[in-house]
Length: 340
Image (cartoon, rainbow, N blue to C red; front, side, top):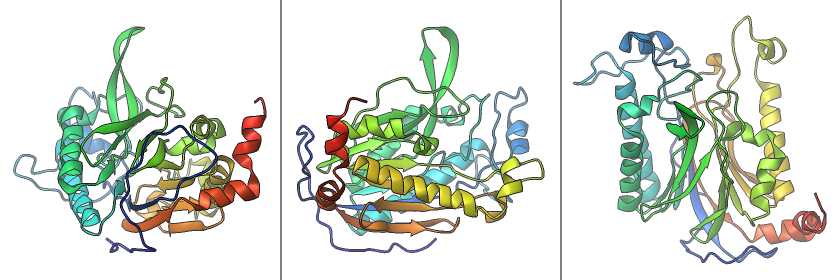
């Protein structure tokens, strides 16, 4: 894994929950993004583990060697434990260089989970996983965005448990201060709750996930509440294979990479905020494209991981640039004056 790369100069700060204004107080935040390779089990490996096919796991095929005393052949539970321990090491390393926030990608503990699943994390217990991350946040005094965890959601309209793709934000006190259930998705159950901004380290933060990047409306909901940093865990890959429609147009991923970059650029300007887009890692021949970045209008990419390999980088961001973005482009002022 690439070593951490520190940039600029940041100091720890913690602010209040004042109502949003057009003016941003001077504050800085040191954050670490982790383009994480979950190295998922294949569908056949999952099916061997459960004869009734309660799992449908859309992980990509890798040669995986994850022996353990409990699961010597490498099972779903073993995979989650393996990735959790790797994430723990990254958290400790980020904390050691003074990072105040560490961000993991979508599905980073398991790899991609598709429609007809019983949550693989439920084998360990979602609450157990969250509690363990909460313990790490408190022990190492660092905020953690837990990528996403697929969890069961009981709905009043059906006795069948539905599955939600959920992102949690845990602060350095070990408290869950933000939760967002993905609304724009092609499988699993869309979230229905309003998405709100919360404050940590004095920064007004919002959460979105992967394909939400394509929906300006999702960002406006947060902009109206004065968001300064939007965190976007992602599992954005190219579908590979002879039957893939996009592969017939974009075999090397240049178009898709440009699409991601252009939307990050646009959403940052449209909403006068920093964006931290953290994508999954993997082999380029399996469709992984990387493109994780921390971006803001005027400064551009403070970090960008062009390739798909696993890597972590740390950067210090100074939020006062948002005042200049507003002064030059007046996006928020004009938006609030209009009746959309």
